[in-house]
Length: 254
Image (cartoon, rainbow, N blue to C red; front, side, top):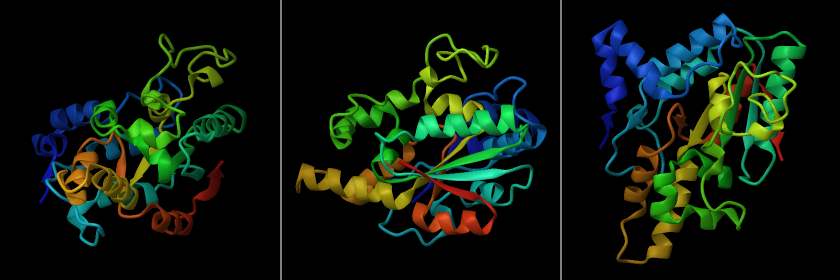
């Protein structure tokens, strides 16, 4: 069973509600850097429903009320500029740095401020899309092979600003600030994978034994606690096909 989040309910309140929803859905745009088409997409994504509030979710998603299909359609139909899809599957790989480098090059060197970048996230990389509350509750750091003790990938470097000098290596645009939140502020969209969520939940359930909650319940809890702005799809590996059919350039983050 699923209830639309309060963010989605606000859509019925008109412009003011949509503004609140946009604020809650994720970090603000990087001031003065995103092009008008990308900013329009970001506003539309913020207003699109995110299906959370689950009590249980099945192994296989085959119904539209179990995933963020409206937000997905916005991504697939984007025509505002070049668009790139990164397959990110290893939490310890260089994907935050590679995505930042691609974004810098497209926006500042090639002059494409409406460049859209998507992270198609699955495998252990998917752990980065859960809140710290979930990391603490389910001991998710154990799935990182000792690489992370907490979800540092959702922490911006303190003091950075979109107004930073582009040449500042520890500034907003530099390698000292590789994280999901800053990428989101620049228009990057992170796509979450239900199949990966349920696989992680099955692992948690198996480790907890018969006394723990079932995998469908754990998967619901994890889904309800995805970080703001994420777009949930049934299967990222299936989504790779849809995105490439829609004209996205594929890149593998390794």
